Image (cartoon, rainbow, N blue to C red; front, side, top):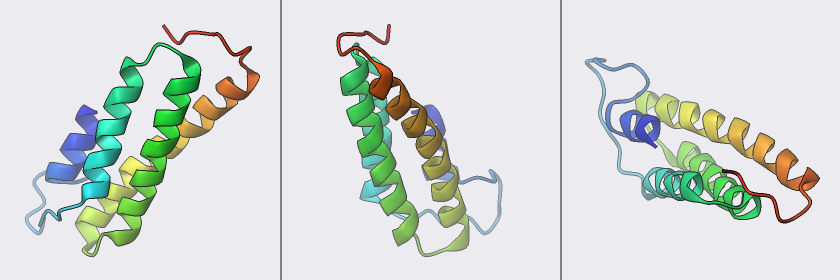
Length: 101
C-alpha cells in the first residue's frame, strides 16, 4: 500500500520538476483494496480483493491524461497484475479452506 500511495502522490520519478498529480478515484480505490487484501486471512478473499485492486489499477491507467501520472499508474498496474496472476494461480490450486497466514 505504501508504494501505491507514493506512486499516486509523487510519481515514478520522485523529484521530477514536471510532476503534476492527477486525481484518480480508481488509484485510491486500488490502493485501499490492496491494503484490505493484505489483512485477509483466507486465500479466496485475498484473491477477490487482489483481482478487484488490479481492475481498478487498470482503469486508473486508462484514464490518466499526463505522461508522468500515467507512468506511475502503469507501474502500479503492473505490480497489481503480477500479484493478481499469482494469487489467481494459488487460489485455483487451493483446496478451498487454506489460509494465507
